[in-house]
Length: 423
Image (cartoon, rainbow, N blue to C red; front, side, top):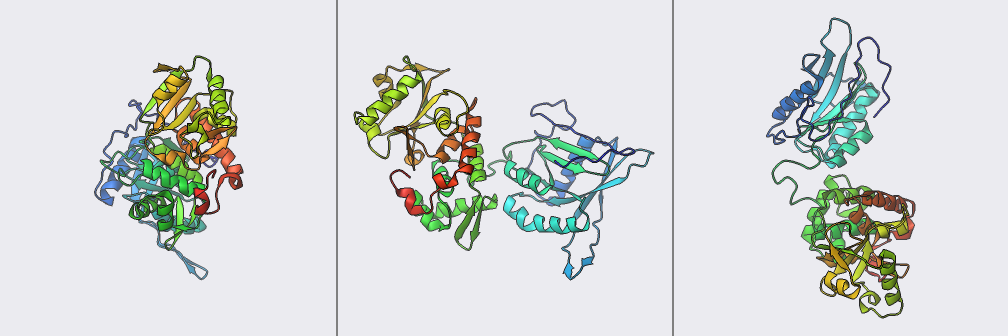
């Protein structure tokens, strides 16, 4: 958010932060139907929402004709955005009139905005650096919101996600709407949920490009058509760049964050108290593995791997302890086997140990040996921690910070290395 200029005359600063579920606030549009058929319908509903937020009795919000832009030097500026909104205070005192450039779209995906809006916005800013602009859409994802924030561009969607900054008169609006697309079936088949999607996401994160869809499909053991479709989705979100059929750049951190946001809770888990304490349990696993007494830990790939806050603390310590979380392979090991072997006590809350029965082997890909025990790869660790409860998101952020600073230590140079035993 840019710094506000000093308020002069009747320049008014408006700042509302709407919390989810607070229906008493003037703009409670999070329950609104975000489904619209035309840009015209979108514009009318978006204008109505903006008038509601600004209170129609206090502010005049209306459409204006777009200006004609002149040529500058030997470069002819691109056409102006189709729509300009004028805002002024309903008062007898002079307050000035502000203008907002509006880019309405029925599908606000980053790749489309990067190709269409960003060049147009850059050219407009050459004429008027103080120009305010917003993207208007039925729903705008968090990833798109972050990108628009980086550009200094506002946004408004029909669920109540609004970010607007206007210098004259001075208006600042920041409201929160739906985190997920409320439109029926929107994105369900094209998101990053599911085991196969996670497998491809982690491969894109763990291995530096370049590579082709067919090479990724072979390395991840996923069908080539599925990989191609998912790459289209990821590219639409502005999380990778392709030149022809070759992936040449991956925004690995934002890709992990986006995948973690879409991830649901673990499906098959059991919680336990450890009578002799968590450190005793870890030491037992370490000793048995070191002496080859436990085939499940001695073999590679591992049949179990440590994750969660306890694993994150080894990489980026935040606090002592933390719940122990273990992914275990269903065919070779079960929570019940661990329960009997180590006299664990099943509990529904306050568990020392959470055992996650893996539904596929993807979570064990590129697992690491750390202090004598198998740990999940850093990318899997982030996916497990960021959407978790308690202090797990903070642990995930700490691991991401470590990953940013030590990319040469964990990111592989090619897909062949992804198959190595300890990669």
